[in-house]
Image 1 (tube, rainbow over the protein chains, first blue to last red):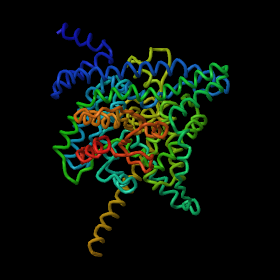
Image 2 (image 1 turned 180 degrees about the vertical axis):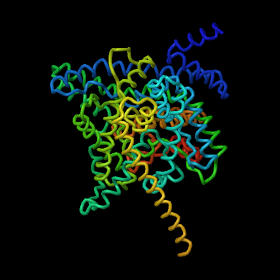
Image 3 (image 1 turned 135 degrees about the vertical axis):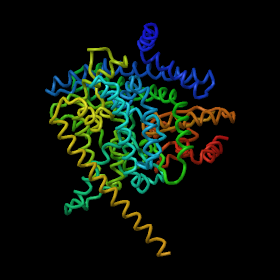
Image 4 (image 1 turned 90 degrees about the vertical axis):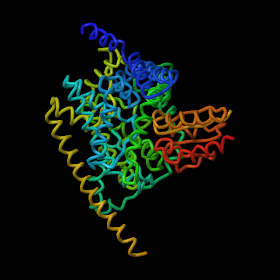
Length: 458
Length: 91
């Protein structure tokens, strides 16, 4: 027994960049991949971890001191770097919860489908990391693995319901028939857009404001992530009081971080492909007919011109909000190129109206930034456990998924440290969910009514 | 050598699925390709010498290059038609 435990300990102590390739190699072999392919998958996931470690190192060792200097110059406190989802996802995949998160999320899906609690067949395996993040944070906060697993299951169940509720929006506004978005991040803010819409519909004059601009696309070059990263680096360098050489260096470094991040993280996805493909085919074989929605990644929505325009607008707006959130310590960075994930579904609820999207988005970003501040401690431990940041040196945060109310509410319920925060976020968010549920019922009533009318008119 | 842009929201998840499928497809058909896997908002500045653009989301913008929607690689519906379409632009 002791020998077995010693073996397990040795294996775990190898670190995620070595342990996960071995796990994925074995899993891929079991799932019927050839030896060479399985080996490649395993190595690929290791490459992703080594790569993201390098990029996060580049970011923290250069951007963090600049952010500190900038904060000192202006009396701000934005010295914790937002590593974004490209940084948060690998940390989560390296956690001990992630290994079981995929089968648990699939199991919850199958149970809910069998009990007819959802119509979403989720084949988007990558985004299970969002549920795993919630589980991993709970695991760290409470020290209980079982509660962490429960967190994964609850978040997954909630995401599938979000998929159901907003499937009509996905179909009608985005034109994606038979597709739902049970997405751990894009999903959480969508309920906020529902009461905002309801309220704005009842204010004279304001309810008639409709901005459906596509003009923002002209600024396409500035929306290019490398340019955005470079410009941000230069601005932060100037505000930090660096000399010209320092300013330009930071600009190029931050452009490099923004471009290299997905280039290294994609290898993790490539390593997960055999697992993802098998899960997909199992789910599709069991649940195939038109009464189901296929659950896919919210990335599918980011091509819509209004989403593109809103994403561009929200780059400066998010930084501005970060400056005014009370007690904020986080410098938004890693999530900025894909800020569209935060507002994509809201654009659909608001039918492309940028004015309304702006209002929902401001509430969403305010909430996300405040929550991710509360998560800095736990998030940093997650990063240390993953071996991607060295203990005690720097702190990290992410808006996606560190800023999600569902992660915050679940972790605070299971390990309460801030009753006031839990009550305010909990009550306002549950209010939004209730609004969404009522709105969804009305929508369903409307569509069944209109589908009754069509045959009679023919 | 044909150059293909494969893009999605974050250049991590869905574009990796599509890029892997396209790479295998072209290997099978002996078409040498180079894949540029990027975010959607990087397409505009990477168009030179590109023979085909594949995105996993619907884009309403015309980049003036042959375009195929790669969503079937994710959903598994109409994969063969999409593969045919991609090959028709590359042959």
